[in-house]
Amino acid sequence: MSAEMERLVAEFDKFQTKLKQAEAQFAKVGDMQEELSALEAEVMSPDRAVTVVAGPSGSIKDLRLTPDALRQQPDQLATSILATLHKAVAESARKQAGIVDEHVGTAFGLNVSDQVLEAQAAGLGTTVEELESNLPEEQPRQAAPARDDEDFANNDLLRDDGRTAQAPPSAPPSASSGDQFLQNLFDDEEGHR
Image (tube, rainbow, N blue to C red; front, side, top):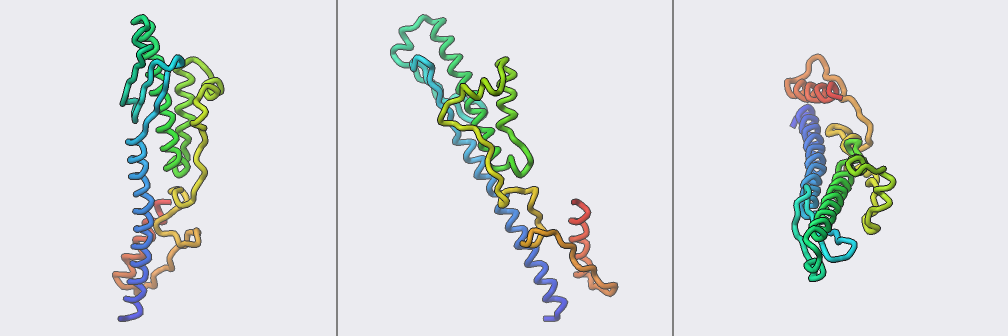
């Protein structure tokens, strides 16, 4: 095999390796989708008579009433069910935001959890701080730590493992069509940055 062909094969192998790395990163989005579809937020009324389990996108998966709940006046029971439903749906939204932040928030410079809390506080006519103080203890709200392996902003399909973008060497004037193809591929990538 000629030296030129060996170099082209090596460049192609390097490109394929970078594509596989990108595929692995995007596979994590599938993990996020699975986690979101399995999400549940269970909330119990203060008197423990009503329990609501909310799923993704505010779907209601379960509603449980104790015998004590059935002894309440209809209006009182309806109020308790609605209040518990609202809390469960709100908790579900906060959990969804946390999952999104964990998987892609840092990569895209998002903090969905804060945005959800701000929207909920505005909708309830309260402050984020007051809302946070009433959140369940077992659900600490923290942004996910930055992880370079999931930070799409810091990854480039054509970047060397040394994490520094390097332009490929210019093709000599007598470059073959294979060299020209690779040069155009790299030039196109450099132009999109």
